[in-house]
Length: 415
Image (cartoon, rainbow, N blue to C red; front, side):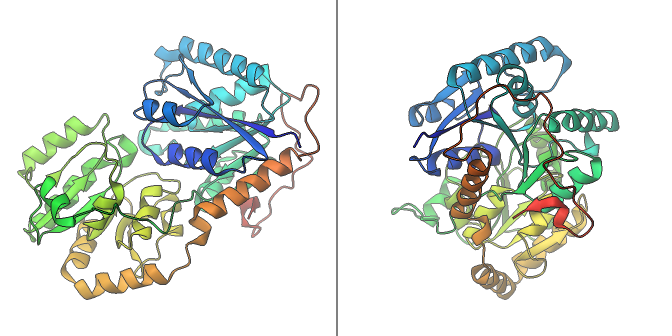
């Protein structure tokens, strides 16, 4: 049986949920049926590591992460490079991820390699009105156009799918719900020592710990985390806050921490590869993101039975059961966020009750086997093993093959 070739595109190999999801797919898809290839822009934190792990890794030298007019000619060059790579690999399926690679990759597929079926995954809608009305409308317009170049749009959360439908993105295009998947049976290193981990971060043995695994981009909203920490620390002294990652707002975050006088108890340790160990020493996990598709760090917190307090955005409410496995608060309500964190920190019995509820909940739909099973089913539906694509496809995809969703039909998503 001839294998199906899948070429994945992602903007950059940084430490994030989209990257983790793509790499998990590549490592777990059936090797007897699928040949996988990955292409990304250079400059990612994981470039060296992934280069050693994957044999079919390609770098698109012109692909830049930021969306800005100054990169216009780089974007044209990146589109050409992507197209030439497609002609070299001759994939049956092109699967794009992340906003920039998603836009350029889909255009390249339609210009240079129309034989391929094109799939795009929204790991979260990468635009928000908080970024400005003009920017928001521009992103929506671009995504509407690119959806016409796509055979299947994949969403990781129902709320993202519903919002895209409301905005008119993907009208007439087949949509699928495929959750991001994590390992819900995590194993800590054999020699893991919680006391030593705390000491390495200068956290006293009996102090409470609030953790956020994120980065310092605007939509991850690190300043709200610091402001909430300050409100908690005004009433509770033996609490330490950890916000991981890096990015453009780190300097502003450090300045705010200094101005509030909480440098000793708000820790910014940068990128970390010991996420499970940090979760193991944490009492509460917090998310202050303004946009999230289905955050894998939140799923990892659930896998480690850590109660959460989160802004109720996008797919977070599909993972967290309010007042049962954690608390959901209105986005940007810093006072409510701080109050819920204090409630969990002060009441050990409540934390234990939430932990037990997490333990009882069935998270199988968010596990790696479920994600891989749905992806393989999707790929086989597009390119059956006995039917390879020949000839040139159309620039815009057919609409007549896909049913329009009706009210109450689950937003057109196939489970």
